[in-house]
Length: 407
Image (cartoon, rainbow, N blue to C red; front, side, top):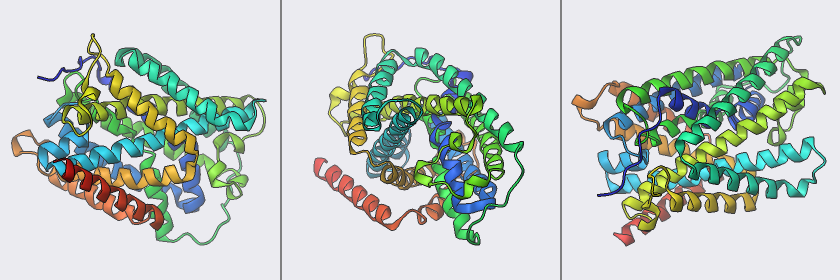
């Protein structure tokens, strides 16, 4: 019988975990890029992404309650669909979230070199050091990690509120850009959906959450409510800055819109802290999926080993760190983010399919919620750049071929 992790995470801890996973690149970068795509309609894009995330989050909560083990949709695919879906979901999750963590780490390095005298060529080394630091923290156990999460979330929210208040003190402007069409709004929504997907970290921690049937659904709903309010506040504030029409999306930061002074520094520090929170929680979430894949022998079984206290999975966590370090070495933020968009949409499509298979006795989320989530994922994925779409499909085919050969 495989070892089980200790259930040490409460409702408050699960909410903090979700907020710490989401409030990073989403709040401090992606909402601004969404405003560049959708202009004044960015608030609609935020709401569309929120509805999609809510449907997927409830499907994840349904599954986590019915099958509360670590591994997320990797485990749900095995349990409710078939091994091919499980392996596909697990592989997509590991690659997508490793890319997201590498992107966040590189963003930390970029922020640090831009606000200090540190040379820019050291940004990747800073990113690598941050990944190793948070890997060591995760190895200390989830209870200690939650205390750090609470501090990170507090700083992030304070910085965002400072930006929102400052932005609304500006004179409202009209963002100059080409006429916004419906596909601009959906394209922005696809990008912003990725900025919501940290809630999945709550579901992947199903084995460590107390009373998962009640705690996980409530934690997902409350987390998404808080995030949506913050995103709407940031999106509304962005439209008050004349310079929003001129920024370069790939180098955008909220701090760059503010005049030099204490508020700018507060927002910059909040962004770095929030990115660090994303990295922390992604290392935690991805390592748990690697742990689950080791248990089923889709990865070498040594990755299923826990420490003596059964509070962490050292081998799985270090493998996660190595994958992220490789992606940091590549250093292509734009490609990593786009590939992450494709993989998470497919991943949550599988999540909704699995949720539809939950038995009536275990069901508390109506089937139409999962159907809407599935349709939303399939509808948004077509707005990913075709090069990324093709590469992602090839990756899935390769994963399935390897899985078939191993079987």
